[in-house]
Length: 211
Image (cartoon, rainbow, N blue to C red; front, side):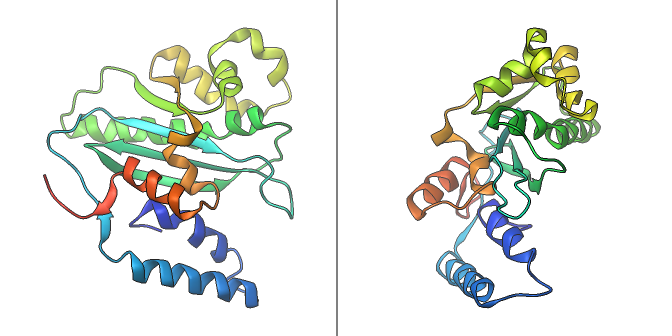
């Protein structure tokens, strides 16, 4: 989970049942170990020739947990062609729609973006331009950008409007990304092997090399 984003969702899911695992959970752990055995050569590669611009990818499911119907949010930040920070986390409250779930997701994403920008600044990297964060939900993007959506967001806790403030300040900019190219999707839900392989390629998780 700490070394490859393609493992994060599966490991986080089985970890929730670590104190009282059942047969189905042990079966899932066995599948994870088989996947690891078959992908030992995979790792994260970075390139000196790739852009030094920090970009993020944000995704969320909707009511994905069958127990409490809370949604799971995830983000991946890329730099120099590879992921440098990623996380998936269940949201603290129930979202009433897909758009609201994706709007609530960016709180930790925006905070991580600000922290990474400060780290890069301390390293002497120019971060004067806004950090781009890609999403695949147009309604959520509209909530972040356009004040006319205010009436549809009155029921959302004030803390989740932090991203809208950062957009208005010009610290981050939100752009649309097609669902099939959403890198953070691998941290939000289980993916079939072909899709996971495609997302790994987009995230530059492959046979390890240094360019």
